[in-house]
Image (cartoon, rainbow, N blue to C red; front, top):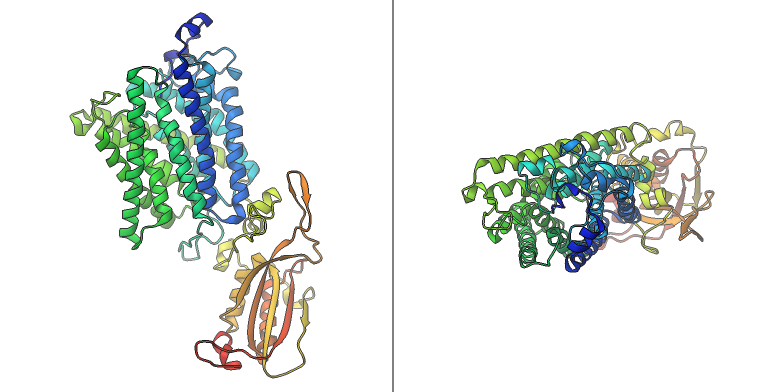
Length: 591
């Protein structure tokens, strides 16, 4: 995706003389396709995460493109494609809003800038999924601006400006396996590292817990949108279709992209079937994206066989790396952003050094086609230096944000969901309750879940209402309505007194707190209720006092919102499997 060498200013007569309407139209169409990929990223990331954060995911993806548009046009594009500063091939001369820069080269300057800025938006939004479900919205916005204004444009200059130092070495990255995807993937991993895992992701022994995505149908739709958009991403990188040569290149690139996507999909499906005993849906979707990420670098340099091999290797790589990061390194990347974009971007770029066919458009021979090891070495070096740049710059950005304004929301906000805590949105799905977040172990909050109950022995703030008739015999149902964050503590406390079964229901309501006001399109939504849980247990009457005391000790903080306990008489209970009735029907759960 090389632009005019050196970006010398063109006078209007030269620009008019070289103008080609077909090439300009192709860039505009390709830019629209890549822009539409933003919707695909939003759907994939939202579908792979929990419903209570869907609105936050959508907001981040929307703002990524908004910030990319302003930051890249204002200054980033001149860093990327402006006249080379001091002839070093490191960065372009800064030019605010490109007031002295003309990037026309057959196509118009505006069409070219539009095409490049949607790439900047794609690089930024990759990071959203890796940092999902626990990042402060304001902090994320700061990262996004810095990425689009400086970090990404510098690498663009190195590789795509036509006089960048990596380009002059012979480094090949046709459409952005490293320039776009690896930068985004590594940044996502860094962000996830500085944030730490989501609450409940790992227990005290380091075992990972799965947080299933709330809507794989939406995620699959996102993958198809991305596949569609990739026709513009890779195909548009030919920068034209007006000549037979450019038209042939574009057509071949599109076919090679499709082959890699298909191979990645099939290989990840087969590998997950081999490893887990079933073809995993989420990994198969990731595999499709992995194949397309990996082929970006060599789309103009490899043949059909190379495309299939690169896609197939990427499809396996994404599963292996995602598991390694999740289970071994223990960095919580909710959507596999690093595995898809970081690892597969690097792998695909390096494989060009092996599989480049000299008969293809790029005219470079890889090791397997009789080429020298220098091509492979340049590819490996380029991957390493771009990774190092990203780690240093974005690592610094996240470190500074974390130790100044903060990078992560509070535990209470995270458990409640970022939709409500960051955006005042009760749910992205009106009328449908979001997933319940259960704490598996006391250590998962970074502290004992009982630590908030210091001084709880007095229990002065708890209301207990007994709606049953006085009786020392028979069965009772104990119901507690309390904060969602107390589910883990409640379960642990009841386990200690022998109650190993309870029914937990997500409910919404308000008492002294009077609900929570939220806005939709600037208008206050009436009767917004606070998220609560209702836990119910049926047990012999003789255990009621013990169970009530256990519930109090678990949920009491002394603050408004601790909740209430209700006690009801139960006429009878029957165990369906055995036919046991009365105490015997609930004895295994309560004694």
